[in-house]
Image (cartoon, rainbow, N blue to C red; front, side, top):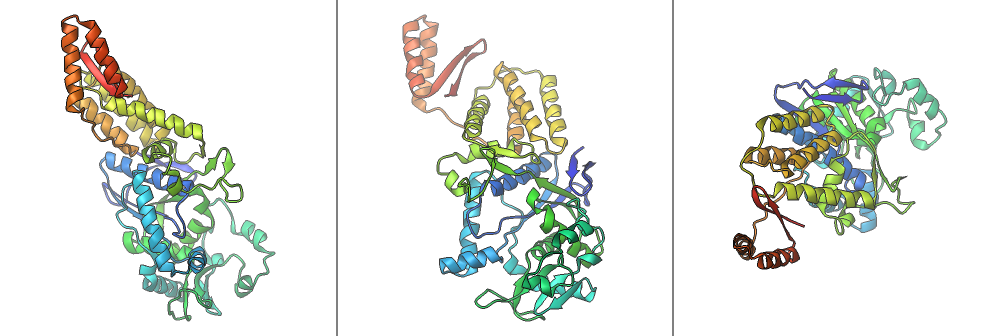
Length: 447
């Protein structure tokens, strides 16, 4: 039985899907004006791992993750680059797909783009105006937060607390609003900006409305799980809830999940600190599978500290698991012990996808395998566990000449020609092949 820590209720809740054996989940994707950074990668890997565990347990997962391709940052970056916002977005969507593929992230069921949903966004905003949850002001359209029941409950805030914090705002946009906390559903176009015609004049969507429309258009008025980084709790996810539930009168998402932050050498990642690292650059020096392993084996809600030592340790641990998986099979293994490992793994992962405890079970199982318990059923179970973390190794086949050397060494040992046997062992070691002489025969692994 899977239990999820729900941000809305601040509690661990049993997962009950809307449709039996199906998970409908929406995860906020990147704003595509640059290469993704390690924080973006953490979210992509965390929710990919969660998706993989749902699939491991037999669920069909409809996994939707958007691309925000209409945004102030995109407009600014496109202007600086001398290209259209669409051209810039196309470039960085392609980069996102390339970089996340290197991290072993499965393609989403759908990756909706804002530009493809403009008509639906306009219709959504019109509905909110009709219900008196929104109003037009000088070409902009704003949402009335005071009409939203339990506004900001997700972020554990109250409307009165937020109003105190916003009371001192004096900018031009605030002057248009009925309440300083009201947020934009539609923004009137500025000169030279990308825009679309609407009942309120030319303009473009606000950030928050985009995800509400894409999620409900694809998955329906109520979805099982909505996820994203902890930084999205407020205002983004808070405003998604307000506008979605105002329009439909239904619960927007039954479970809210948020992954923790990433620090670099114990400092918050920031361009001003010089520790802002894109995944695209990182993959030039760090193997994508190693980075994936580092990110996937941390419990998703906990903060992660990215350090060179942490990556080095991940590389060593990953090599150990690879060597374990690729060793020759043995004739026997205790079926009850195998069953206990599988149960322990599921118990760990059922507890809010606790990958830190789950990978501990995997290492315990690896130790058991290396003691001489490695039949085909054991290998299959081990591979399936690793696949939950997005770790899939390609089988390495020994070259014919290496196989011949191993056979020749075995023949020399049988003839008690230990000098030749040792010479062959050394020759293989020089090629990165380590031989293990066990009671079940010779086993090998790559150093």
